Length: 228
Image (cartoon, rainbow, N blue to C red; front, top):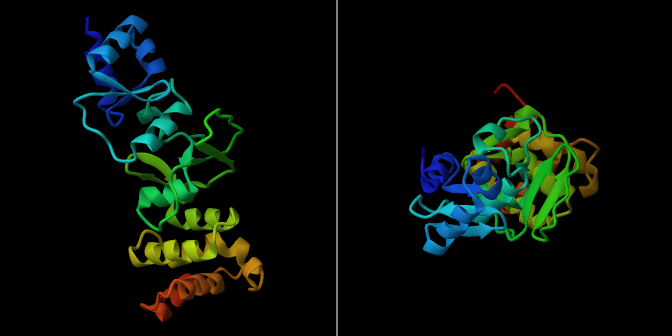
């Protein structure tokens, strides 16, 4: 029979070096064994009920990953990522995962299609449905696509100049297509003085606000969905 640390490694190696207390108990690791591994320094507690196995390497966005695991601690990450009801990294947390903008990422933000409560003050849950075409697996985490992220930030009344900078970086680094960005931000066009649904006009405004001038005619054409 596998020893406790080996059982935890079997879970953690497919989960960024992390495992939850619930997963450990379900795998037959006793509470006393968890306590001993913590005392010995072979486990490190990174969040309530979430541990990192020492020697497995520390992943990037460690606290974000731990917060995501806490949302459904019994189910392994590899089973959750493709679920239609999975929590998606969104808003400022998605921007941090993409590496764009300079929004604070100390609040971990997720979008779920169903109501979900958390006691953590540094976790924010947004309720809403995200179509399949607006989802992506990013750095091993299910997240909203960059275009949807921009729309969500506008919908959350994030400072326009900050969203503009993120938009410019998304376009410049080809994280999403101009037409998709225009589609996702179109519901907020009238808020900025454009006609209702004018995502192309709003995209052009955001790029102007960010001081982005590269290939603007091409971007406008792509945002309109022109063949050329």
